[in-house]
Image (cartoon, rainbow, N blue to C red; front, side):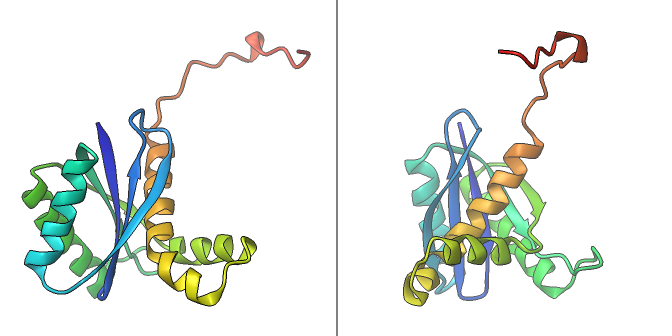
Length: 150
């Protein structure tokens, strides 16, 4: 089953989804927010289409690690989404995810208009990829087994 990554904003929700193995995150879409019912309905459609079994929502912490009003709003929305999709919700520190996404898009030489269209879903991709990387099982590695010569 796949994981849905969310970058919850006041005007948009960036959405990303993992591959079936949980190795990589792909930017999926940006949902323009209208009202809670419509926002949740859009996420339910996406979750069903992609067979989602979990949500990872970005948590916009302050730079000192504390939670402010935006983190509280993100938690509230993610909990509502989890209930609507009937899946568990986890949170991932999203500090600087939008900055990293913007930098990546600038390096790709995208126009300002194109960057504006995809920045939120790219931020969701960064959030989800960070969570996937942190939750990937670590295989037993023994230094004795390492052979630097192919």
